[in-house]
Length: 140
Image (cartoon, rainbow, N blue to C red; front, side, top):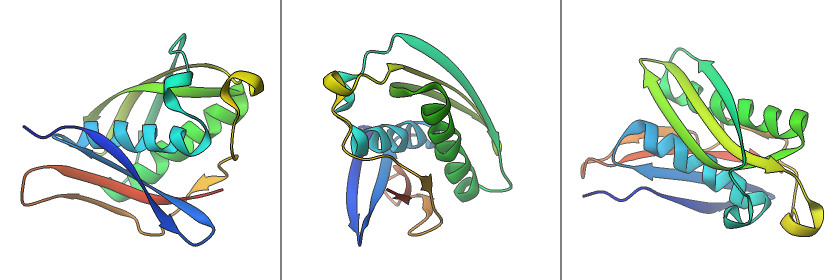
């Protein structure tokens, strides 16, 4: 069985985020978790408040960027961090719920502010082993 996980990968002054999962939706969830981990330890963020997010794009790669940018917008507008994600996909339409809490500088000690998800190193694909990979570079 393929275990869902997230990773970072180096990219000059920015940071790569990568989600891996047994299904595409799980890979998108893990990419979002990797993005939170650029800012703070996701374990320090309580999943206290739910926020709904919908995205649509012509393909999976653009959908990943749109999903992560929608999360960045919610983080900035609501002054929140998110630690739990539930994504469902219907073609290239994404429906998600992100759970998190208001930023507490003392508790979360945010390392950076993410400006946006980019097309750099953008890849969404199913590997030979059956696991899905969703990755891109985020501008910090």
